[in-house]
Image 1: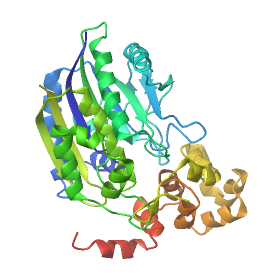
Image 2: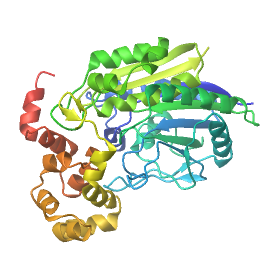
Image 3: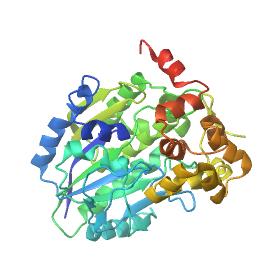
Image 4: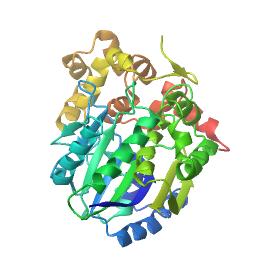
Length: 276
Length: 110
């Protein structure tokens, strides 16, 4: 039997990669964000995780509108880095865990989730941008990615993501191996990348979200897409991915780290939670 | 009728379909060889990818707002722009009807 030993919510952004690769983590514009990752990294090492399940979204890199999956699960030995249109970063490919992924696939389908199951799945900055701040880039710990459609509406509800995380927890707990699993949910926080409200950030909403994901996730699961997009921008709808992380932890959690920083056109959030 | 969120339409499947040719060309630019061909002959590449002449003209004009309005996803639009040396900030500002300089000036004090 496996167990969920931790949960991490994090923003993702191409800019994380640029800052990291140029060694600008201590730049005053970025230090308030990047400094938050160091204690989470130390905590993550102490958990000795065997596996990361990462609920994220692809940004038109692995998946295209010709056949766009609502949920896609990677069952792959290797997850190469996607070329997003400007070349790859100098990072090794990530390792997958097809044995656990097929177990997860069976459990999710039994639980009435029906993901597209991918035997080839490159991963983009939705995973690759924040992971180098959390782990050595030799990627000792494998990842099982779950990509969520948060781009082409209709997209799944916040409630659906909340239920997905609970289903991931059930799958971990009935796995044949005794493993420690950390579940991550990534995206957001508020940002608006296009149109009349380009550059919109809502710090008040972002901080309310960080409060409620910890203590009142049911409230967040009950919100509509319109609620999320009016408060956090049309692209900020990615925040619903965090709900899967939260419900995978069970009802009670203890906060390990919380960081928020909004230097430009995105509210960046980081939250690490331990199940109680 | 598009569902609007504070002046911005929700990116629906119908919009993705309306912009399908632009979206498909942009997706092809995740390949370095395709990017090189696009940069060498952007209009020829766009026609080869099936864009109509209105869309080809949008590319020629760097009219990011027109492409976005026509259903090109912002995540794909920045692949076209990136290949041509423009940034997300330039593209986003343009879709809001402003230049990058105007946008940055509006941010002062934030």
